[in-house]
Length: 554
Image (cartoon, rainbow, N blue to C red; front, side):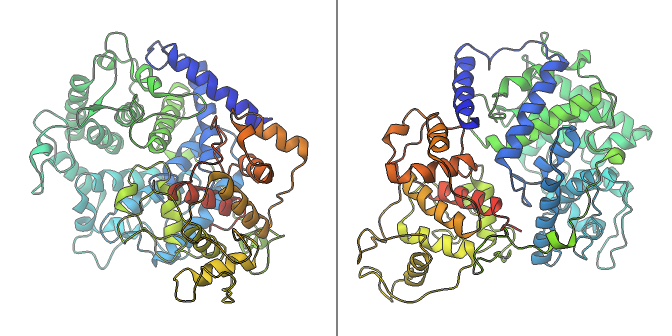
């Protein structure tokens, strides 16, 4: 019945918005906070069911959930750690040649689940943060997150024999202090040789994060003075409605960084300096909340709402922990400790019933992304598949996420996604040996994943509708060992929650019901739109979701 309830929830959210719920800013009582945390945790667990190494759909989701106290299966974190091990191994321990915040982000997530970042598949992720010059290359983000990461688990900075300058905590603290701007705040490159015109103005995000990093050092008089000045700056920057703007745009993530900073500094959220016209940070952040659907980046819905959801979630968790007198978000002496997977499960490839030819596609191109998927709702799925060589762009830097996908392209990615053995026997007259997709179409056909439009024609350039995609993905899921059988009553129950289910082809109903039931398709949708062409990004998300459910994404 959950799909029908999801439709009803979506309709209720629409009514709530029409009635002005998004614009209301009344005091948030603990019951409201707890309800929003529980609801958002459920949404994240469903939407980020297979967390990867990444700034969306990865570490921030793991951090928020692990620090929330919500009931999350231990296997969720165990699977994430297994993915991290595979990713780090594929990288040879080098998460990024220049962006050292990649190490910091993963370290923080590992600290939150009680895993040792000093030994991940034999690699020490702390070691790069011992290289001072490379860590500060990114601007203030580098030293800020190096301190947050190192202090999250009280880790010693290892000796890095290859570093030009061996880092110490004091050096990172001093770097942050030296970059303070005249108004008391901070910007990404302010105070450095790389500073541009935009860096002369303090940014609430960077200022908030700088305070988070400095919070553990406020017993130093010079640090205490800088913190006080930065707090005054943030108070002055706060909008009349209690929120914050960055780059002239009101947004939820800026509020999060200030909220977390206050929590790290043990400053109550109703501190008079941060209450404007009766509106607190919590009041304002809740205007971005959409029950059942996480948080918006902006109240008009623009930007990456998954990134906003993950960050707003850990911001609410920070507020809750502060209200309950618990350790702050980044003081992880009370972090959960997940157990190692049993040896038989750690070595298991896929589900027990999968076809013997189905294989896990190893990460071959870690960190692969495309310029045109930044902040796209399906970014993390596209990146995860691209890292494994399952999906490729139209060229090296362009994915064209919102264009349609051809039947030949689908056959290609599903064969790659399942690691199937290539079958070169020709079947269709319009799929020639000289075509790049020849082996993939014939392989997908031989495994009964795709079919032709006739006995002799495949129509490789034709587009795929949503119901066709569901049918093909369901066949692939069965090959992966998933139970795709559903009774007539169950199929009807799942699809009846959609306003246009009667438009669905009889032949596709069972497949669509399966995809919605297993969250391969997003079941918060109100319409199926069965005959609408599906996009490259949507196909990527479906395949990503299916491979995750089939335990084939390590």
